[in-house]
Image (cartoon, rainbow, N blue to C red; front, side, top):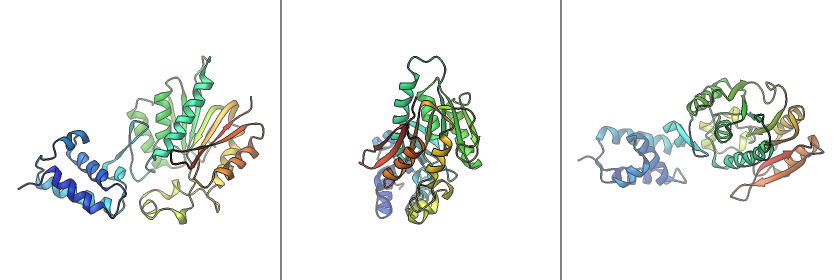
Length: 286
């Protein structure tokens, strides 16, 4: 007799309990992907019999997840800011906490766009999968966005996501180191740069996600911000805004770097829903 959806979900959850903080959700996402069904339909038809070949394939997917591979890599996509994005081992998996950076960037863009006829110029530094650039492009239809990454492989993923959301005319992908490929001045510069200390990265993240997109340099992983701020002084328009995602331990350090680079600007540190320092923002002087 063929196993049911309920059988497979129960078995998958049990296998993942020691390997994942979200075993039930992981099993559901993997099986929904395999069935090519919406998750809601799968949960509504729990007694549906699954062919043995599919059950065997599901077992293999669960084994990959039990080995620490992110669900997003296994299924090939991840939702970010309500948008479906393609992801694979060439890019970091977009994290929910990065949505705070998008929200703050949209608020700043809204203030700057008021009463303007010309489109906002936005730069996304270290774009990776293109998650931030795509989210901003969809939400700000009058904007022009330059998205930069040093990795040609990451830019291939970003290009697919830009095309998927119909943004190829407004989001330009540039290869280079941080702000080096940019020309002229921008109203808004955003970045979720590498900011971790590689030796302290969670083992599963270290094993599966690209190291180039993880380590920020220096004993606190914060050297990269000093480089960004130094270059941004020449690329940010008066009255513009610069926003960077940071590690929870970096708030005071990165804020001090920002104040040193923009002594006349207003520097703030925003916390995420977990109460951790997450974004340093600079409102440049006019």
